[in-house]
Image (cartoon, rainbow, N blue to C red; front, side, top):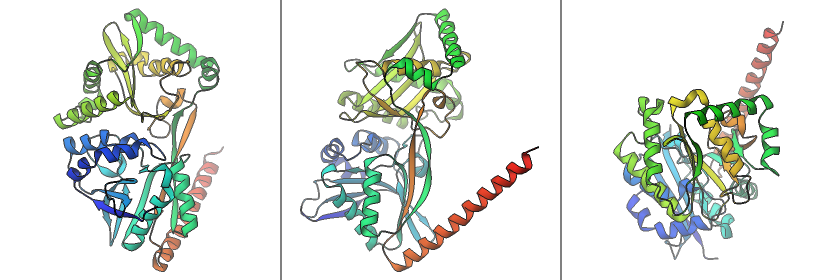
Length: 388
């Protein structure tokens, strides 16, 4: 293989020129991340940017810089004398209420080790930088490949822990799933919700099909978010003209490429709950990007009813997708009630291979261990004091 090098791009116009090669990489990536495909990131940058600190680390053969083998979108920020680079995500990038909840870069599956080495070699040459690698799928192939390269290179790193979020994975049939995931009492409650909704009008669960026009679905989603608490707080996806344009461009692009799964619950002629799921066209794992429900119907839990209907569909023979990452926080208010699996998200701190960085990371590791021990001891003391 030709020598691979890592270079930094900050110009969105240069990334737009690389879009065909970028999309080709996304289609053969070791691990899919729809949020980092050009269909998502380019409209985001062009319609809601610019984003301070957004940089792209690109890996390609030295003699063919346009043949992309790795795309690493990072958010660059200063922490004292150090420059920290984190995956460009919601938690680390700011922005206009646009959710990005997966920090896995796009890496060519056929040369993943060499691509990771090129990035880590670049880090080693910039000793005032560190990678604050955030929101990696702990069960994903990129995370496993990354840990293997750390071990092979003796790359200094610190495991910062992580969190778990709801994840949907089907079982042998929907009856078995619901019996395991949802209590008998809650199943009865959900049937009552569904019956009460039916009394308000004909109730239909529907899926956006490949030949359907996504326009009405987009319009109903804007209306739902604007009418609820997000609209009142100005955090709905349609809060600005730029965000609206971005959303519509991204949805239409994913829909046309087969990378979109959307479903909704309609009562009469009114959409009362809706979910958008992004995925790569050749992948079975979807990312639940946006969910909303009409607060006027809140007492009948339309969001929960919608997810129960979707669970039935995803256990059918013609399911458009099999597994879904909720992209939600731990203990999500209602997904945790009906999705019985979880996905572990990992966070790592990676520094250059120098004696100074190794010593600093060792000190940070010991400090973190002592802090965790104190927290555990404090929790145990509080528990004892609370016991009768």
